[in-house]
Image (cartoon, rainbow, N blue to C red):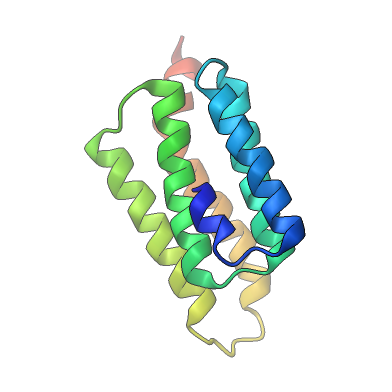
Length: 128
């Protein structure tokens, strides 16, 4: 994750990547630091204006890193979802679409996808 962000990085991006590396090391003991590491990598990617492929690789590895730090294992449905979201996000950025109303429809569609994807996590709590 950090190496993928460091490839296109300039000085400010490398400083953020160095901080992210330190956060990854601290993240081995404290889970909160793992989240900070992912946020620092995201900031490094924003500062450097990285291309789609490094951002997709960093996003995929960041998701895997967070899942491993917070749950300890990656299940098949989790892996399929991570790769699927990575492919869809990469396609959405690279395929030029000239539809003027698409920015109005995209946020509700993304919200609906997140609600459907997380439904098993919160629907059990509503029943109890």
